Length: 397
Image (cartoon, rainbow, N blue to C red; front, side, top):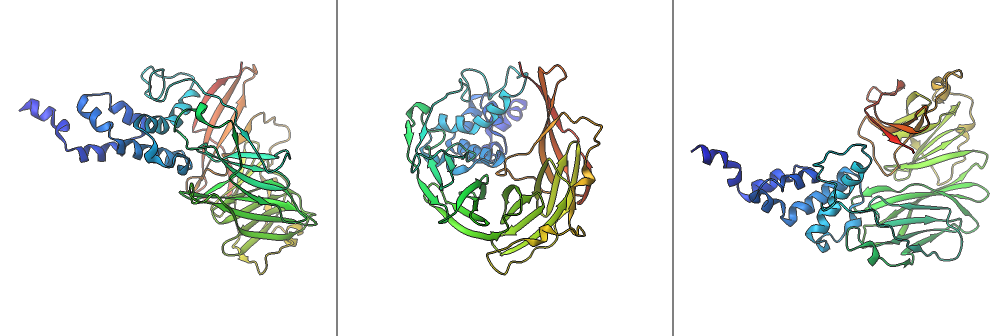
């Protein structure tokens, strides 16, 4: 009787096993499969690793179509693909436990780093000003002053890198507006599971922004224009811009523009002072200056009557509804030797929180302490001090 009770879990129906396994992370699934033959049989079900790969894409915010068609991946390729982000993360940890399921030679995620040079051909011989890999490693965006384009390197996780072509022709191209030059391109942002968006800034006698969408991939490769904003004064000094949902956010020296390109609404918020870093989360604007962090709430957006906007509001000295970055200015007598890094705009923040990293160089200049910070901004507007969630030290020698 006691023996029957102890073997009860092994007598569970396969479907119940699979329900339990689907709740586990990929490395835990691999470890579970090493316990006994009965569980190993369930873990080796193909659908287990298909689900694990989709979960890995969701957790690590990888572009899932990079692995399409998933049914073309065999069981070992599925395991490697599902475990690869965990293995890479573990490679940055100074001390790895000996039983780490995602590392070590002989494991499905093990092996040395493989390098292959692939030449990405453009439409001409003009140098590319920017190249961006969509997280997942399959799709690559390129930009020069004449056009933006897209390449497809091929299904991630299928075959070896040596099987990839040495030269790739572009899959899609969009040229600049006649008479204008493309000056900058945003990082892509996921629009759906199978599509993403990006934005460009063009310069003629004025500044303009164009928003594009790609997908659903891998079936639709075309880069399609979905919105544009023109007539922005060239007297404004652009620092950077990024996509957040249906909004394009532009950080100027004079202030912040938030443009809802779907509902054709906007708000131009004047500012004074400076900030080392700035980002947005929902209706919050978050800025960093040294160890100090400020959070401001965006005013409600208002209708944009045309596709043109000079944004004269940003030249206003009235900061009643504006942003004063001087409120987070650090003491001039203090020496802030650390650097703050924000995730790529592709990665969405948790609700009411902002994640970033702080790199603190060691006094011996041989080590760097990396602090991962999760800032709770649920309280809304106000000034904050950073706090470290996790940290580790890297040897720079």
